[in-house]
Image 1 (tube, rainbow, N blue to C red):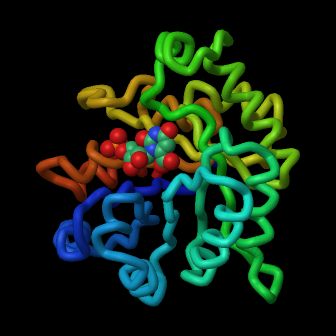
Image 2 (cartoon, helix red, strand yellow):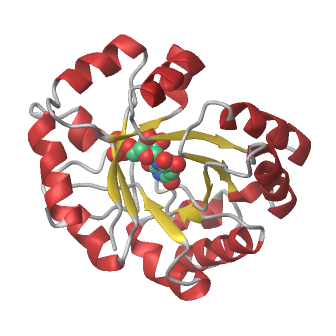
Length: 233
Ligand SMILES: O=C(O)c1cc(=O)[nH]c(=O)n1[C@@H]1O[C@H](COP(=O)(O)O)[C@@H](O)[C@H]1O
């Protein structure tokens, strides 16, 4: 069952985000705060958004030695965000430290999601630059399997890999899928793309949509279109 449309709030500062949100009257989208907005606006914006009742996916894609990631995750968990991520390439020890760091004294923690292979990565780049000579969907499924064994809640992957991930990890293991483009949108820098409808058909749990909404002349119409195509609303 599709859960929600997450809007990638890729803006340089809080005012730009506020201007954008004003264009979505009556809506309270699940927001993804990524590197650009977090580096520009800082943790105080994340606290404000949480106080205002937004669900927040804090997308900082941590990738470092286990101790560093664990300690950083403890700080992020204090922001009361709903979802955070790391790069699966950091390995399962890093993931275990991340879970420890994220777990609050009351036992709760944000959902922890591993980025498998970025949706901007092509099969050719995987082979030529990363020296991974396997089909990208199998690489994604492998990264998903060890992420699941480390205790993570799901992965970021392209909608094209949802079925193989669900086969490897079971239906409850979450798939968060960027690389979403409407049938009439430009691909931009994304490679492994799909429409919201394709993502729904593949069994994706959350789609992440940025520029097709944020750069649209009518962000409200684009957001509602994504909801209609993905959630069937
Ligand atoms: O972790 C992510 O959110 C992410 C992983 C990935 O593999 N690909 C990917 O595009 N993303 C993020 O999803 C968003 C996609 O934005 P658009 O390409 O503008 O729709 C960006 O904020 C990316 O940082």
